[in-house]
Amino acid sequence: MTLIPAATMRATALGRMAEMLDRGPDPAGDEHARALEAELAERFGTAHAVAVASGTAALHTSLAAYGIGEGDEVLVPGASVVMTIVAIRLAGAVPVLVDSVGADLDFDDLIAKTTPRTKAILPVHLAGRCADLARLTAYCADRDLRLIEDACQAQGTRYDGRWAGTFGNAGCYSGKDGKLLWCKEGGYILTDDEAFAARARSFVTHGFLPAPGQPAGSRTGHNYRLPEPCAIIARGNLARFDELLALRQRQTRQLVNDAAHAPGLTPIEPDGRHEWNGYAPLFHLALERPRDFCIRLAERGVPNSVGTYGLTTADRLPSVKDLALSECPSARADLDTTLAVVVHEGDSDTRLAEMAHIITEEARQWR
Image (tube, rainbow, N blue to C red):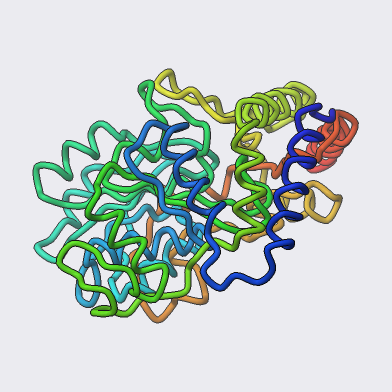
């Protein structure tokens, strides 16, 4: 299926690219990044948006702009992608894993692991599903903790009628290819906190911009600016976001329906509090050696979180084994028995049907 608005988006983007190139090199050029920020804030109903170079940059910037660093602890689900853990480490803080099942955090475990060193909770909305954000918001408010949402996979999800990523102090998003609002590479932060937004904008440009209590150049930052070509693509896709969201939801429904007769696979449906973005078709696997099954699907050309990208709980990530992170047995069992199929805008109906056929065929042989 090809969206007619995509042709319009490409034409508009190409025109803006040509205008940018005609102006020649401009070291201070940020016209489209600033325009994107205004359009994002308006589209998702927040006071501010800050464009950044990636989803990881959004997370690191948010932690740094709230002064979370050396010796501070950040509570994060055991079911976290490596980029989330890396962002906490880049800030100098310590990730503390909380057990979880699906998107739901184990609140008893969260309460037990909250200490005087805890400065923030960072829920991760994997596959566009959210934890109990109302409860998390209240918990953070009672304890003066920051709530920073990793909503990189949750663009377009509504939870309790609100956009995922707009419950906390800051919502962090990715523009990497494969995300709903893609721009090849990039990201953004949504917030209602004016002072935080100013500190974040300063941080992403080496600390050169002034912010409340922070004169220009008084603190170091990073080069996390969003390149203008990526901002141009993002603006084009934001203008057709409703179409992109509807497409992803339709794609996921189609693949789930087409794989309905695969033995040992049960679709994982969102609860009634979600208006889900359909980020990835999700199945519970009642098969022996489910991780091996996911690897087999990847070998057959069905990309998925476990088989293609090795998704696992953060305590099992080799790159952070020096942290000796606590084990999260419920999160591990959940991820090990979940198939999350990777789909994107370019997948045709024929391609989706092919993937569903492979999943069904392999499941029958596996049993």
